[in-house]
Length: 397
Image (cartoon, rainbow, N blue to C red; front, top):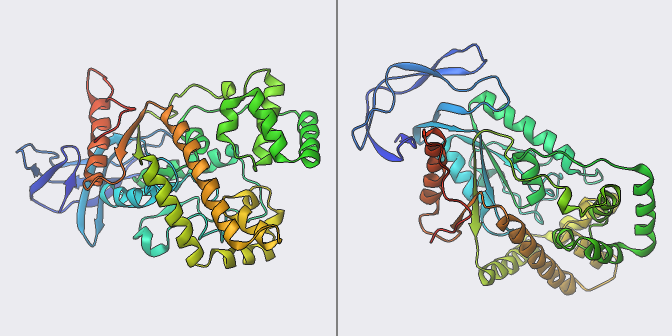
């Protein structure tokens, strides 16, 4: 079956299969189509080769035909990037894969810890089978001893988006690391750094620990403190450095929400608090059954404790404490549940501030259809002469 979400209607008749024909001047392929009749009787395309992409970084994907075992699918829209966001354990990864299958997309990871190789169980990476043939990018790109920064991630992600455009694929950014998502989607430049201030703050961190430094950050910038884990000394130091350099709260140094791309659709998965707490506990139980402690043990032998970023990941930090004899295994498990719940609440609070996100109930039986309709609405409104935007920041029920 061919799906065209220029109309989101079921296709009734196709005169001829769509096939790639030639390469255009921009470097993308063209597709030659015959008449496609939609259920409402409108003709979607007729005897024309339409370029799948342009050479510019912000090129919109205009028309893509994909061949798979499920048949041909057509995507006709002007959309630069689709993002699926929300708290951990909401089901973002599975939805992103389904949307990629429907729309001819590729997934770009925006989870700061899935960047690391061999950190699989604790970060809930999809297996190759669960990815269902959908290309995934920015997974397993760093060694556990390497430090990850938002600025470096931004460069990697935008390069991956440009490569998707060049292939005529829709980039689907997926993750719960809100700052990482914003750094990719928005016009986002990072405040400068002062080596002397950084060195002093790092020395203080080594002396008093991350918890006390986090308390200092909370006094100076409560909003920033709610978004940074008390165990994440590196990010605490960075926030305090920016405050000292700029004389303003760290959150005030972040740019206003303005997309770096012409057309972006953000979908958020809305999970009630009680459901989210239950799903997190169930996920942690699955992690332990899947051999999470052994995964951390192997990573410890490979140098995990030397990784300033990776060693502080949720679950990994707690299991490292258990392996060091600082707590029992059950205490490490329960600490992982509590820390993940706190983190999920911070994630949700951050994303709720962005009124550009269209929120969908995570457990809706027609979740995929609702998501596709929201994508279609974004495309339709961009092309409308009135240039009116779709209502966003709202929850669908």
